[in-house]
Image (cartoon, rainbow, N blue to C red; front, side):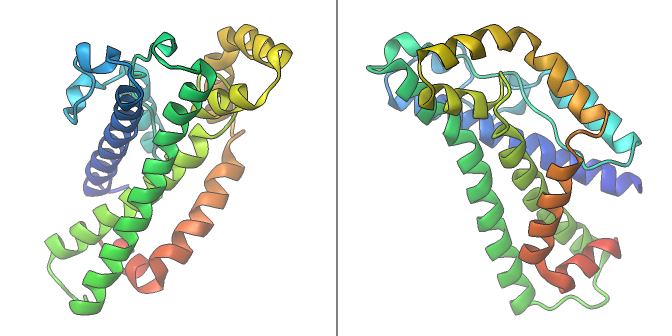
Length: 220
């Protein structure tokens, strides 16, 4: 992988993660929880969201292994006690992240296709190819983050959504299961257990950006 691909991919990862975490904090704040804002996490400053493993180590290792690049940030602090219905509040907070990523992917796709229609790229400058590469990878990363976070393994967003839908017995099981969640997630990532997620996302991604955009990206 070219150094330009690595740098642009990491920029896309960091940007998508920041939007994802900001969405969690913003929805929690709107529901009455001031925790994220009080701790300086209701911000688009990437430094406030960096997690040494999820934001730095995992993306770099995935790049070196030539696997699709994604990651996660330090979770935004949320205090469910501020919500009228804690499980319902956590449902809204949790789903805000993946929905934001899907919205960003669709908005970027529309913008990229619109720009390509206005300014067709043939043998453009390196900067032009780099720009469309960044946009394309940003679409891919957002789709990956959305689907990955919907997996119902604690502490991923999918587990918070599932907790809202489960009866009390199921919620207790999830709470006990959470202490093993991180190890399970890491094993799935590096043992290939999430390959089906990557394949599904890449297929959707290619349909969104189309062949012309993809050719521009591979020429970088």
